[in-house]
Amino acid sequence: GAVDHECDLVVLGAGPGGYSAAFRAADLGLKVILIERYSTLGGVCLNVGCIPSKALLHTAAVLEEAQALSAHGITFGAPKIDLDKLRAFKDGVIGKLTGGLAGMARARKVTVLQGSGSFVGANHLNILSDAGTSVVKFSQAIIAAGSQSVKLPFLPDDDRIVDSTGALLLRSIPKRMLIIGGGIIGLEMGTVYSALGARLDVVEMQDGLMQGADRDLVKVWQKLNSPRFDNIMMGTRTVSAEAKKDGIYVKFEGANAPAEPQRYDLVLQAVGRTPNGKKVAAEKAGVLVTDRGFIEVDRQMRTNVPHIFAIGDIVGQPMLAHKAVHEGHVAAEVAAGQKSFFDARVIPSVAYTDPEVAWVGLTEEQAAQQGIAVTKGLFPWAASGRAIANGRDEGFTKLLFDATSHKILGGGIVGTHAGDLISEVALAIEMGADAVDIGKTIHPHPTLGESVGLAAEAAHGHCTDLP
Ligand code: FAD
Image (cartoon, rainbow, N blue to C red):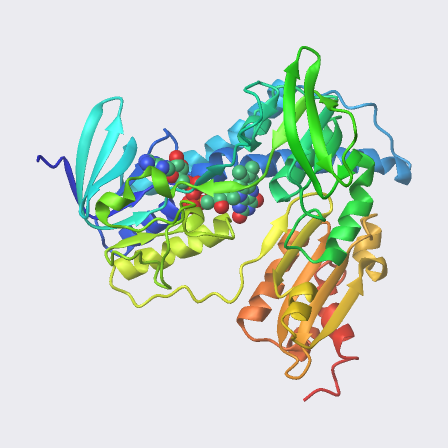
């Protein structure tokens, strides 16, 4: 049939993975088409994920910090919250970034086509839009169609039951809010609503919040955050919900389940995200998709069809923007003929709650499971001049080193700005640094970053006796 557009590389989906791949490929000289079903670039991350949530979390943190100044002798009146203005601030942040991306695409001569793309063959895609259907012929393709939140099938259709996208709309501030799923996304949104005045309940099937994080970090988080919650229900299942005039009545089952259904003004379902692998007709191009909708790739991000790549949430965990970006760069470079590989040792994780929780590499639990002997270096922020001056000395920095080589294997930080601090630990792991390298690096004083150097020193006395 007729071909409307032809290119060296088509990128399907303009999230952090897709736009990063498209821009890198264009910089390397390929003729690139970027297909996105929505009118703005940036995907989940910019439009309904990382960025809007951080805009609101920043607001929440400043609000609570201002209230905490009463301990320093400074008091403000009760906050007046104008949700329309707050929403406008958040939307303005998104607009700046998505607009910036559109400009970057133009500057690189990346052709952006709006519409829903689906494969019709190994070298052809259809784009469906309001304007009709057009056909793209490509030499290579990168699938970057991302993921969407899992919907619990038994929850009724009601405005007061939302996923993260609905929660970010900030329609109103509930008195009682239930968070289903105690992972990062649920707890971040809970932090925002709590700062704005909501009382929280959280229900989690597993036996702890923030699965994947070091338990010692989570303990500190939970102790500080328990005042936000009326009920933290671990090892508990949500089994049904009924929408009534005065609220959503939710029933639970399990060890910590209340006997009676509980009434909520807002229910946030945050039980994970599911990949969009089955929604792009990948099979028509011969690309294998797993039952769960993931697309498997090799270390060059190639699918089973060598000229078709996949990146980001659609290829698996962890579903994080910085992983998608890195994979996008690898795929684009390989498509442009370079010998790139995904060979990152570690991918950091951050919960941008208050305090923040950040970790990278091996955790203590994993070291124990894998029988790896580690030396632990712990620096409590109660001994950090800067943390004390900030009035926020509840955190700690923990580093794990190989017991024989003293090389760093992992680290975790709980405390304000932990997300910004974890990068040094990630770099140290990538560089194969040992405790001496980190401990003897002069860190500026007084900073929270010093805690990384001090934790390394704590791991091995004062490091001087090391090889
Ligand atoms: P996506 O961002 O999902 O982008 C895929 C794009 O493809 C979308 O724009 C979609 O519209 C488009 N698309 C899909 N199918 C088609 C089709 N057939 N045709 C055309 N277009 C299509 N990660 C972090 O690292 N840090 C955070 O702080 C963070 N916070 C988050 C907060 C929330 C509330 C949520 C929901 C997620 C958060 N994430 C965070 C995760 C992060 O958003 C994702 O990991 C990231 O967006 C994945 O990027 P991607 O490029 O794989 O896919």
